[in-house]
Image 1 (cartoon, rainbow, N blue to C red):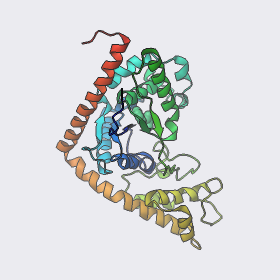
Image 2: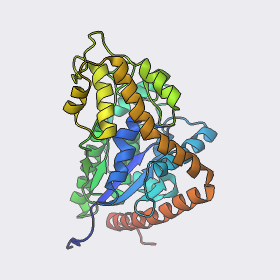
Image 3: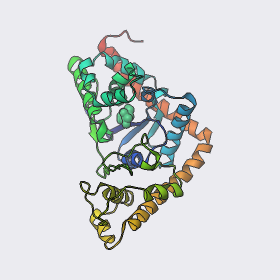
Image 4: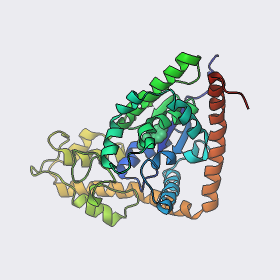
Length: 335
Ligand code: TRP
């Protein structure tokens, strides 16, 4: 089959609704999604099926899911361009997940480092969903014949297994799935914990160690003021020897799009207090308009509903095509 030269490359990505995202999630994922909207044909999914691999409180879960949709809209995604949807509203994800389970080996899943980490963390609930999580994720991507998948480096292993499964299926049946590739943002500032800057910023750590995208200016100021630096009172970018200072510098660069050397030069003769004031200012300036738009959109329930319903319909139509193609190849009686 000839490729239509005007068809844009397709992008699929997902984010779990596990609570208010951190500044790290914003810089690493949410904000990049918007930058891809014009150049690519984008589908962005709230990965709520993945979320129940860890037990959720129903009311809180529902609230987190709506909040994530509100934040994606507030961070500038245009639902007329990108398809925005809840994974659970497109049943083909669960269906393809099952089919792909039967093309995936236990040994492959056993090697997944995230499964090992998560089962250590949730030793009382090592469920089968946690084990097959990467297969569900592979289905998410393959359902839409995605060419590119913007993800963080922590998802590389999941993407590899997705490619392996897709190639295995294609090897058996002929072409079924597009083989996807990871898309790693160039401005890939990895935002680190404010309390232990050798570790990634994470909302599952202590409050003071991360900035939440909904933090007020006062809270942001307080958290940066308490951020761990070092005792040599010199502002330079050196993640190895000065992880705390370097983290604050790279947050500024990521949020302003500025050049690191110029930034460091602008701090010559200045102290950590000034660095912390600067990172506070750019963070507040970035988040304030998002927070205002978030407050506005969350009140407009009818609009939110129209966005996720239209998204599910558009995504569902694409997903059904792939699912039927695969089922026919496997040998199922056509409905
Ligand atoms: N596993 C991803 C994460 O935790 C979320 C996710 C689910 C995803 N399905 C996806 C990401 C498909 C990209 C593509 O970050």
